[in-house]
Image (cartoon, rainbow, N blue to C red; front, side, top):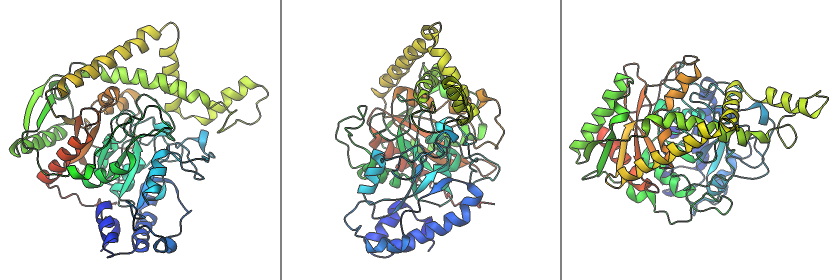
Length: 480
């Protein structure tokens, strides 16, 4: 048996039943990574701090994750391991502390295998904006894995790790999950602590899991959710055991399909695959109706105003004084600031800082930023009204399958790849992307389910049911 092909849940069960050793699991994962990552480039750096030979000597029997491997996106802090955000600005930065999600994983017995590649500071939809190298989609050597959590999605899809953590600001977990044929969940804003997550847009960012099936997503949600005193936006509430909602049952579940999403022109194969899944959900007992989400058409514009404004503010801290890169040879303070930011930031980050600074400027604040915040309220109210009558909202995750590396040179075309995902972050609601088919090129297609605030259990139940209903034979990509 090739252990790297097993899900996290399968590996957990085998360890509990003493059918395999942790050393065998990690050796299989390590071999797969060593042979595969040079082609995919999912990792920015590997965790060399743990010794595979010593794993079985430690007592993991009472821990939830049993010493199993997990990868972490490179904008989530790990003590004594480089956290670069795939940026030259933080190339040498080593955090002195762990993010709360990392602490939770370690307390649960999880072993972190390394940091995964991403678009610089999570700004992008393809992982081409990494300052170090682009990551390749395992399903096509000339295809992007999506972004910004492209490294996390690609590592899971290629079998280098059973689960990973990413971050989602406007679709950065769900979009790469769709492109790479894996499952990705963006939790409710405030369900998972952001302490230790390097900020892009603080009111939108959220950490979440990626895995090869919904069962592993539920398992990881049990680990990472919960209140954190270090994060004032983390909500103090009781969370269920998400694995109890792994039920193949959508009977009488009311699901809305927004007209505005399907009135948009997008790839025909994506449309047909999603609508085929809708028909199968109907046959399984779900009640599906067309609905109206009136604010959806303004979501993309509002998102890129709010996100860039917050990015402009958050990234002001990288000035060459406090931490990170400092340009050498500057003979005055202003020149040091300018040259540090010029050398440390990539083109997309600079573009978003300039856009954000512009919309926050005194002459344009009311016209852009304030108006975008009003639209945000309208979009949230639209969702709240729909969830008063419907359990879930369904849409495609992305308008296309994975595009070619270098294909979307126009930033506006790249931004349009997030058209179905950004409303979720604006409203702060949870959403999950589940594979629902393949196009004629053999590239995965994702379907998105959206739920009301803190109703992740409904998402997990519906996504688990859809997984069983579709019964897709998602084999490992050939990695040609």
